Length: 437
Image (cartoon, rainbow, N blue to C red; front, side):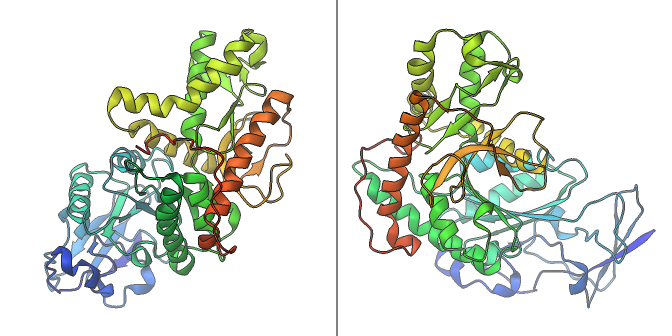
């Protein structure tokens, strides 16, 4: 038997969560709602002990002098630090995951997939640190209540707050979903500036308080340039750890190729999305495979590949908005899960996946210093390497050049946020991003 000691992490202070007072909540509470799991070194004044066998669920023993903490959500009030002096064999070390925009629709799908173990597996306990705003704080409480009511065994802690410097403390994954949508009459340059300021601040917070090897996945649009801004404001975190989500575009491309070829999705592999998550993105059918064969040997309609297929993938998000009345949420959440799994599980032999990553040192001749979607492989350790065995033709290179030019223009437009001088906006055209309207 291994013995772990826990201490309460709640102060006895009563919180009054009026919106005008939220920003003044005590930092000693860790976050505005702290559902506590504390590491062993902080258990000096332990009140709860937890006896854990290697293949048994933990059992809490509550001391008589423990006080009821009125501000916690019930099931998270008494949780367990399973890291004792000797690690138990049945549980892994807790992973801290921060999610911004946590009261939104994407997060509403994503959090429950993560809590169910879909990314890290059935023996990996996790903690959620959910970031919102004053306006969304009550909704965050509702999210925490739903997570509580779902009884996820792996979910050991839920914290909510509005200060990234508190929420991002010690996180190992940061999923940055929250961003301002594009409103009527708003220029794309304005959207870049408004959202860029959000991601600049979040980058600074990650740089200050997150794990030094935190993996950062930017979902909020324009995600490539937002990822660049976040990265430039976090110089102490490896640039390679920042990703812009283009996995949804890859999944959409696989769907269209499977439909055209009359096969199921799992027969489609080696699909790359090149460039920006915008309508200039390049779904690569030249290197893609169906049943192990080059796509062009299976789908011989080259006109369809170059025109209809490419356009369908580029504009899929906009069409979905027209049909559904809102931007994609569930499929975006699925693609975030897919993107995370691609980094924590070894890439199947010969295959690869798409992610928007920093171009410095890339083998393709893409301009350096931008975040550009490219083909990646992983050993399952959270890291990746760029794929070298890809081929190019004139069609592919021409379109890669176009999306590259757009990202270089976006970079110039946010120079004031990346520390690279005075901003100058000369965006080549207004390529509407899915979900901006």
